[in-house]
Image (cartoon, rainbow, N blue to C red; front, side, top):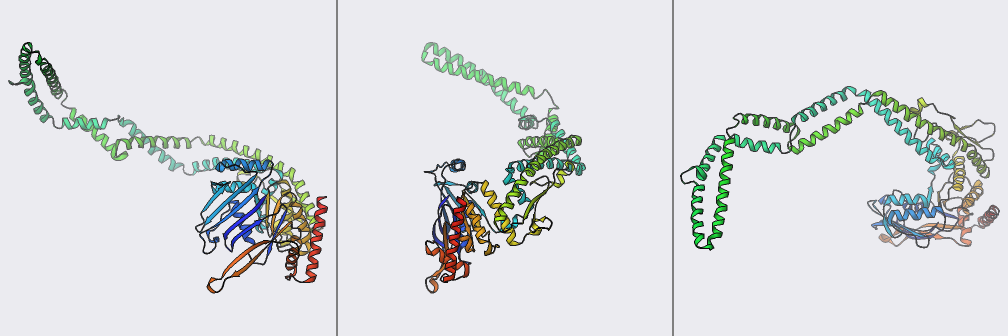
Length: 577
């Protein structure tokens, strides 16, 4: 349950602290006084989208803190695991503090259990802590998808519905692939041929790693062959072939130095170094001679290298510009070609896979139909029972749904909400035919049907906090006691917060909060603020009188308010007995 709600700078609510009761909490006040702001604060805690314009004028950000006391149970254990996964936090004596701050740009900061967390984590956690239902839920129930979700919530088949939606999407994906394959066959064939041409060119090029740089170096030599021959001849003349060749002169010097070392051993080191130099010069001469000899081996080599370079450069212009880029292009072409060839699989194979996936979706769809049909009877019977308590004793409810599906039409007719349409039908008056809910109920009747369904689902779901925003708006005061009694029954299993304008409903409250709007200051210093106050004792009766006739001091209205409170207590005692 939500123990305490702290609000700061949320529109007209500058500062507010609301300590909620365990059972039914009622919020009332004048129109425009700020009742909806408390619901907005709860939406902030649930992780819903909040506009930055809700930040109070003159402030930079709004902040809402919620202190939840979880107690024991499977849901509380789930919440504890979610908190640990979201931010590594732990619960302190089953107390969970949730904080959300929203700035003027609509950006949020979240803390769960005192630790930073994401807005996504808050949304997941919020779905386990509280549910919020507004007036729009009445009209939403008219939509077929909402009716599917409602029935699945009762039957426990929501997971089966999601499984069907996944199988349906998978089959439709294969169908789209098959259709696409047929529609753009010519374009795909042209692209496939072009990719094959590119791959053939790149494969036939057979460019080796580092080949380009080696070719360019060789071409540099071959293009300057005469100059190379001349320079190498000059080198050989200086090293070995000339009259004053370095090899000969070094040999002479080495012989003389060795003779000197025989006389003075201190020259042995110099002689050794000169011997090494003679060997190095001799090796260099042999290398130059060998290189010069190779220049005469293949006179046509220059043409061959030039042709290979032209071939490589042409490929680089189209697939490069660098050698690395060319290799990336070759890899991309190979991957795209493989993808195209896989996509261009045998249409018969695709058609076979489509049949398999469609049948798999149909199998799940039939399971969902059977499960929904099994739950439809008890669901409708329990809604009818609830409606009897809400002043609709003759109303009958049934669910219109096909008992099987046509596999051949499944991909065209089904939706992610189910294989066949689901339509909630009602008969309000005896002797009249059943009609779809969206074509039958008035605003007040529809509100009561929604309340009956919410009561029914709330009995199954142990979500700690149920928030109802003027869900009784289209219900007259004549039925207020029945509605209030129904909400009181829900509040025996849940903490309930309701914004209401009906005194008979408010009479059932375990905690009644009044929101007032006031103006403080003078002149340019005037500011409008809304305040939240929990009523006690006779204050409750005065507020009920004000809700009934607009005059909290009217004696007759006060007397009627006391009677409402007494009746509500009697009903609560009878229901709890």
